[in-house]
Length: 374
Image (cartoon, rainbow, N blue to C red; front, side, top):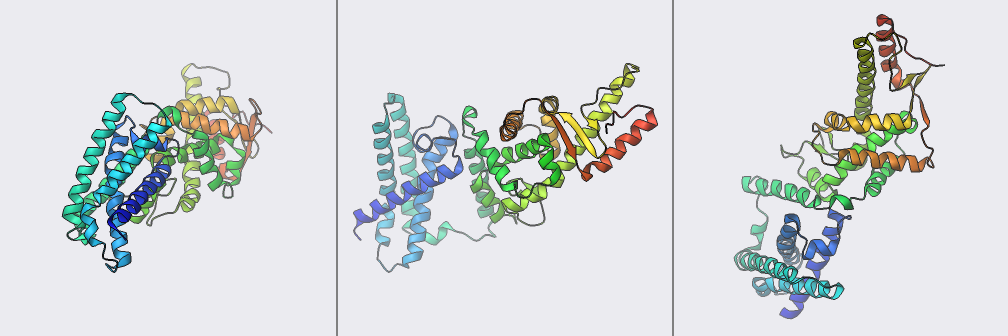
């Protein structure tokens, strides 16, 4: 293979790797924008460092695959040419797709120069000298630091999606489809509970896309990795997405029970504070074997309390647009029910018995009617 052929093949490989990784990292965000000239710092980092990263990885894999039998090591020092070819191809394609302001091309040129400078440095100092230096020992503290850096960087890049472009429906069905065959009976009956479960998963799937979750499983031995899987469940081993789906059910159900108990108790406290003889305005009604509520009323109640509910699940209430994720999940559930309007949701589930007995006991000791129906 000639030098030109090697550089062309490497440039194509870099382009394929950049496109695939960008697609996996965030399908909601335009791939071409991410690899060319997005305005955010995440896009800048990806456009500068991404081609160099894949250049080094591809050359390393090629070197190990051929074991030096093809005699192409002489081209490694100038492999930065492939990064240049890749960037030229991108700008030609971008220019062909549409017109841009002059500032766009200046910004692209600056990023290209920075990327080429880093690529040339690594080509001459590492790839052409001792390519095995790309992968130090896993016991090396520096290696562990850069591993952590990659995890954080990928998480940062995944949040480059514009808020208005978040495909909540896609995220909902990613969770709902994984859980569909595993939903406990209560989750099938309680539409708000199912929406709450999916909303938790949607947030985790958005802020921790598939590449980040894969790295978390791979480097589970590091102290900084505490939760794994699409539902981000804590366990003594690395979890797959499917395993975390099943383990999250009892956690979300426990949070839901706590929420219902708290809202029941708050209704009683309000009635006591105003010394009202009327039955407290409970957000749900106890039935013979479970509970019932109005869908719209409970949706509004949970929306207002979503930061507290998410705090119980993930230990933080600071995730942006958390309530929007929940409302989107509710909308998807309602569409699955063929737009029923404000229906009465009836849940008959034995898992509610402990909570039900506790509420009935508290109400009877206080001399207050439970509002229990037949």
